[in-house]
Length: 160
Image (cartoon, rainbow, N blue to C red; front, side, top):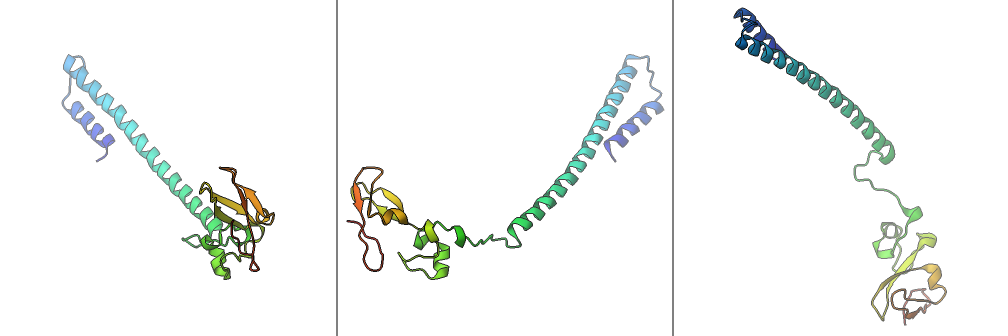
C-alpha cells in the first residue's frame, strides 16, 4: 500500500466516524489528514523524479561506455603503442624492450632520447637530451659543476 493509499484510507475512516468539523478535535484530525495528504503527494512526486533521474543516469552511463569503447577500444587493460612519442630512458621504456634495444643504444625513440646522470659534486639527478650530450658537456643546474662527456666507439656515455 502506497503512502497516498494510506492517507486515502485515513480520510475514509474520518468520514466513516462522522467527525464534527466544527469541534476542536475534529478540526485537528481533519487538518492532520490534509497535511498528510500533501506530504504523501510530495513524496510520490519525489519518487517519480528519482525514477526519472535513474533512467537518465543509466542512459548517460551507456553513452559514456560507448565513448570509452570508441576511444580506448575493447581492451580493458588499455595497452597503447607509444613508439612514436616515446620519451624513454632505455631500461624504463616498454617500446625499447619490444624493439630489442640495448642499454645506451636506443634508436626506436628518435630525437626524444635522453639520459639520466648523477652530478658527481651534488648527486643531483639530471635528465640530458642527446643533442646536449653531443656538445660534450653541461653545467649542473643545482651546483654549477661542469660535467663533461666522453664517448667511446659504441657511443656509450660516461662522465669525468
